[in-house]
Structures are given as structure tokens and as C-alpha cells.
Amino acid sequence: MSSISFSEVADLQISKFANIGAFAILIFDFCITFQDEVTWTWYRPWGITRVIFAISRYLPFIGSGLSAYAVLRVSGPPPPSMAENIIHIISIVAAEGLLVIRTWAFWQKSKRVLIGLVAYSVVTIIAAASMNLLPNHQLISADVSTIPGQNFESSRNAALVYAILALFECVILALTAYKKFSDYRKIESSIISTVYGGSMFYMLCIIAITVTNVIIDAVFPVGYTNMFDTLQLVIHSVLGSRIMFHLRSSHDHIHEMHTPLMPTMTGAIQYAQPSQMQTNERSNFSSEV
Image 1 (cartoon, one colour):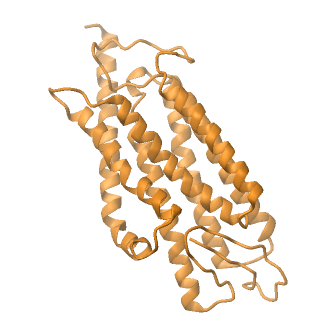
Image 2 (cartoon, helix red, strand yellow; image 1 turned 135 degrees about the vertical axis):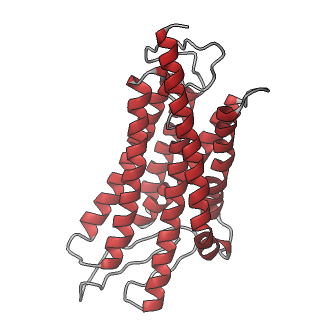
Image 3 (cartoon, one colour; image 1 turned 120 degrees about the vertical axis):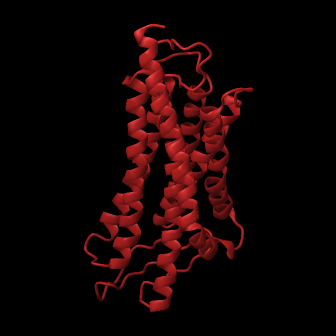
């Protein structure tokens, strides 16, 4: 075996450890947020938002489990890579769906914004899925694996998939930031800062891991290409769920305090533009989650 092969084996081992660590993060986060899930979702009526939440919350366990099996497998048949890829795609799409619903609601459920977001989402999904499911067509030149039968490495096309996803997430972040600073720029409200600021912070975290995967898959040695594959899935699931819990918790806190910023929460999120402000806390702020 050549020195290049030894180097790839070491890189691959690091990548596998990273995937196991990401699976552990998912399990740990589920344990510490399970009470929040019971409180903020279990007793709510089923709707499109709750269905999407359930998919983004629980399907990653299957995808991460398949990745863990591929890492720990000593003998026996390898896990179906196509099924694993599809599960990863569906899980990430569901998490992004929660962000789309939230952004649409921030824009007062504008039909134009909804049509634009849905159309852009469909284009993004088709483009990303096409590149992810056609690994034999290399759009980025790549080194060939020196390990025979190795199936725990990604195509370099994954960098383009993550780049498309990162662009979509940047658009979502930009829409949220624009709404926050255009409508509530002069309003000093802890509620608005919490709702918008928290959501934007989570979005920045999601974009950070996506951009990291772009860099790793594009320029790092081939043994690292799957290093943060599971983490990408986990971060979307964890932060998507936390955004949901955070917004519903903020709503109930507002309701108990009987502030003028009174939202109503059902299956989506809606924030109205401020008008006729009489105090720093007074705005026509309505919300649905």
C-alpha cells in the first residue's frame, strides 16, 4: 500500500469518528429537548407545520443511523447508499421547509413571497438532488480513492450541492434580516429582538456548517469528503426544532405577560408591520406557529 493510501485511511478514520460524534449530538439534543417537544408540539393540532416538524425531527435518526452503521460495519452488506442519500435530502428539505414557513409568516403571509419561496425551493431541490444522485458525472475534478471497495466517500459534486443549499439559506437569512431592520429598526423591543435575533443566529449557524461542507468537499483530500455529512443533517434537525420551540415559548411568554405584542399561535408564523407606535413595546405584532 502506498503512502497516499495510508494517508487516505487516516483521513477516512477521522471522517468516520466525526460522523459518529454527530450522531451522538443528535441523540443528546433529543434527550435535553424532549420536554420542550412535549410542551410545545404534542398538544397542538396536526397541520402542515407539525408534519414538516415531525419529519425534520425524527427522520434524521434513520439517516444518521445508516451512516453510523456504515462506519461501524465490520462484515455483512453495506447500507443502501441511495436510500441514505434520499433520507438525508428529505430531512434537510423538511428542516428548510420550517425556515420557509417562518420567513413567509415574517412577511405577513404575502402571496408573492410564498410563490417566490416555493418556486425557489423547488428549483433548489431539483438542482441539488440531480447533482447528489448522479455521482458518476464529476463536475469538479477529483482524486480517485486508493482504497478498494470504499463506499464512505462522497463525490466532489457534493460541494456544488452544498453551495446551492448555502445560497438558498443566505436568501432566507436576507429576507428575515431585511424584514427585521426595515419594519422594526426604530423599535426597542426585547420580544422582537428575541424572535428575530434568535432565528437569525440559528440561520447563521446552519449556513456556517453548509459553507464548511462546501470547502471540505471541494478542496480537502477525498478521505474527508463525508466528514461532516451527518453533522449537516443533525444541525438542520437540531436548529430547526429549536427555532420552533423558541418561537412557541416566546409566544406563550408574551401571552402570560399580557403585553401589547399579543400573538396567536397555530400552525405557521406571522408578524405584522408596526403601526402607530405609542411606546417602545407597542406594535401590531401578530404571530402564528
